[in-house]
Image 1 (cartoon, rainbow, N blue to C red):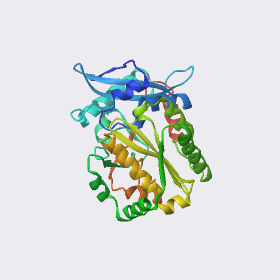
Image 2 (tube, rainbow, N blue to C red; image 1 turned 45 degrees about the horizontal axis):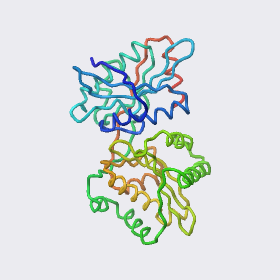
Image 3 (cartoon, one colour; image 1 turned 90 degrees about the vertical axis):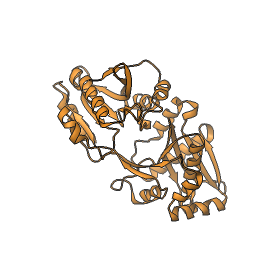
Image 4 (cartoon, rainbow, N blue to C red; image 1 turned 120 degrees about the vertical axis):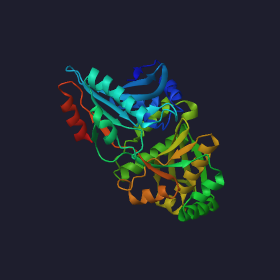
Length: 336
């Protein structure tokens, strides 16, 4: 079995450490974990997996302990992460999952829930059931990836016809586009986003509070970037892009009717994709594209980028040895 070590370091050092790990998402970055701890009362633990003296993977877990009685919940979202392509195998992932179970469920008695960072084509039901894991929840996370190693011409050619036509129209219209990672421009995006989700009664995990707290923790090269489109002096659309490791991700957006008619969303996203490519990022994630869960208009908009769809495996769970593990599982399932 793999050995888990818990390295010492701050949030930015952790993100730097896992920057080139396979399939890194924002949810496994140190600054995101610290933000969840500050806003929602989680405790963050970060570990690396060691095999024969060599590191083969890593994980960030969010922990909530039960007061007085002990036990609690350990939640690993979009992890564990394989170190590189050589260790990104089902065999190694299963060893990492077994090590997590041994530490959190068997040793500490926690209810352990994991959203594995493996494709849905490699179903955990077939490989993890012998280890005592069970499927939990519905289908895994679905989105699409744009390969930024392509040329700008190839990226543009991959855009779907209507999407590309709207982009062409927006480019000719001459809207004023600006980006901001701080100051009045960033605040303008957050304010417009707050109004956007309030007006439409949208429930989202990407709250303005999370955005603002996270931004204070990120290193300069990984700051969230707000892209703003103004037409006739008025803000008509904005998007927010996360940057981490080799990737960038479409995180949040606000828009007006005038912005949608003018193709502001298209020109902002296209600019963000080209900026991520210029920074040397290798992939751009559209930030969720599920045919069953994403509203049809948003699904069609993201689909127009021409990315490659993917779906991750379903969540898995295992009860710990603590007597209250079943109660913790019941509360988690009810909350979800």
